[in-house]
Length: 274
Image (tube, rainbow, N blue to C red; front, side, top):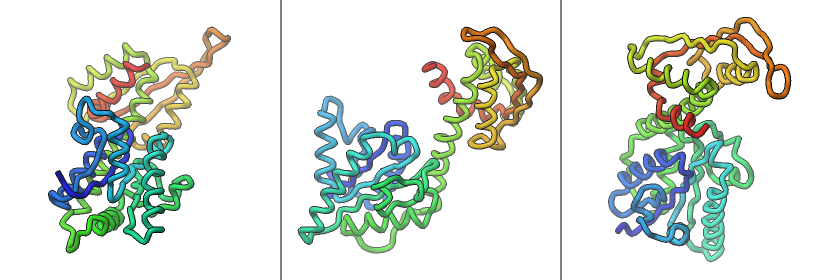
């Protein structure tokens, strides 16, 4: 059992990034630091009282990290866990005791300037910046009472974070786009992508598609999926819908097969949930 505990707050969808940071921190500080990650399968053993374990971690940690994305910042658990350490730190400082750092780590589209109040009053870092990652580790080193040169390669850590971010954001937006099509057609597309060379571009004929869906796809083409897919818009028409006339637009999509293949799991999960 490590003698120092760091608490890493995250939402379930970002558990892979939490484990990445846990691995990096425990590797840096050897066996005298343990990182509490609720989703790692060991911090909260099977059969344990989940809330009690969370409380124990928040009460006994000597510092905390918070993975903040546009998605996680809206979740109540992040605010709850951040507030707990914030109050502990205030009490500790007023008693002239050591600081208990609470470090928000912005990732996957969240920026320092985009942090809401009161999180923006903390000394947050950007996960895509290797120098800021190093700064966070220096703060943790001070909290655990360590000294000396850090051994972590922060450029490599940044690249690993970027890989997660790409999968987390691109995969999610690609899934949103492709799940706008008919499910049977989507399954046929996924099957086709497994049978052709990964660098091959495929042309998906959506046919006459609801104009509102076309607008959603165009928005993704200009933002989150810019340069990854190309839309071609054809003629328009109307059909009878449940609430009146439904506007339709002829649509074709050009996309690389490997992109669909790489994010197949994300696409399938959303397809089953639809």
